[in-house]
Length: 232
Image (cartoon, rainbow, N blue to C red; front, side):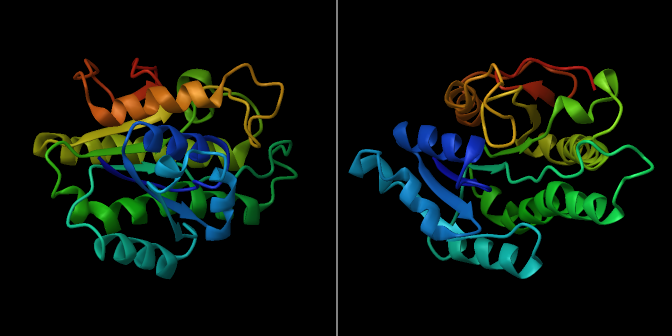
């Protein structure tokens, strides 16, 4: 498969790119700094060669267009997109201290970015037999598990999950798999070292969803890393 992954220089994105390449897939790794490919230096050469770094800032429209153009210059079709890039700001702020700039930046990166990346890569995805768009969201944005504070992240992830469901309604009849994924609390820069989840294992499960080995029996597209439906 040919897979595009955003935010691939660290955290879950790094693990996703590594897992997909180890399974023989070609990865177009969106990174704000392509020099971060050095982080993949420990991989076997044949695996590392499958990871192609492309500069990408999902908060910049021109960067998103360049990312899509760079992939289109090499491929007539891709099989999957994982919108993983995200930011976490203002976690401790209540409504009185909430910085509107943090909210705006979070919506730009965590919502608008994935929308525009999906839009830009859709022509390439349409060329695949079994295309997938996976948006990495969070239980933090679900009404079923809402909690106080964490406004920028929670609101932006809630909007991403809603966007994903609307996109699923449009594209699923055309053969697309469109999912919003809660990866769980995992040990990444964002999740912290105290998190119980293994990001490598989570990445393996998500790559399995991209491979579409089995159809998911879900009414809504908000799922965990193994494809089990979650309450929104």
